[in-house]
Image: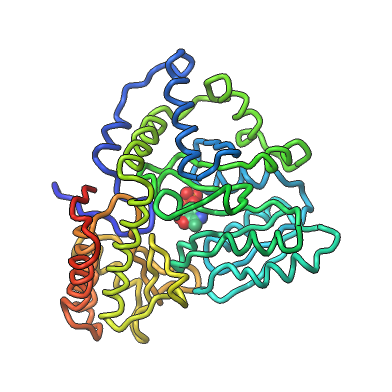
Length: 395
Ligand code: PLP
């Protein structure tokens, strides 16, 4: 097919032509003096997206999972106790990664659809008088359930009992699409990736590291080599990489940051809130329900939507793909077959969002869902028409 539809999976996201062009560059020598002029401003600008002045940003040629592994292995030792809440597939996978690194994982199990339970974190931290907990892990935006969590509240729980643990936050599917405040929220390790809010190909793990977390590297004994922060910081400070850098994606990140700053980060966040709200209006018009339990938990980058009883969401997403050539996110883990996800992050406009809503609506109608054709589109149209003028949106 010569034409291509946007994807509505919650990452990897649609790549704007401007970024594809930026990555389409011939190889140059990464040991030549001009590499530093590309690398260092990019790392400095990434700090603005994390909203950190005191921390550092480290990038690795990896996906977000590599960023998790880097954060854990550089700062912890086997047997260290970590406290983490599980409320979706990605918080679950983070737990799995910690267990495989022989950490002692204290899990707070929550219903999927809930966010990080600051009160339960507070209870466990208050009970930990000897400060055995070395790390507190939180998934900012649980991509499986479309739930955003209040990181400041978890930091508040730690500060209330003056707990010295490091705070680790997964911001893979929030950073650069939703507000994130590393310094203000006291985040020590913030893990993200290139293929979501940054609108790039997969392949750059991005980790924000506080000064306190950097100090922890000196005593942490988890094995690491490829992901060693200290090797990377040392090489970066000399204007290079400890190994061959992924040059083309660095060019892409350079341009992505230009795009984000041209639009203005606050406008980027507003655009995502607006697009997400249109999707939520459509869900309401279909009489269907989000997995997220309450409005303050609604993610602006992904909506996970339960299908009515008796329907299989995998049949729906396959039908949309086979008949209309459009991909939506499937339900993950315990939500398989019960929910589908509309990814609305990265390079997306109201008009693109409407096309996704219209497509899934057609697929639902084909499969005899109890919805009225056009109801979701119309609800989103009304919302987009009447909300703030963002009509000059260019994906
Ligand atoms: N954390 C969250 C919240 C995610 O959404 C994802 C991927 O979708 C990951 C971690 C894992 O990242 P990656 O697939 O880039 O390794």
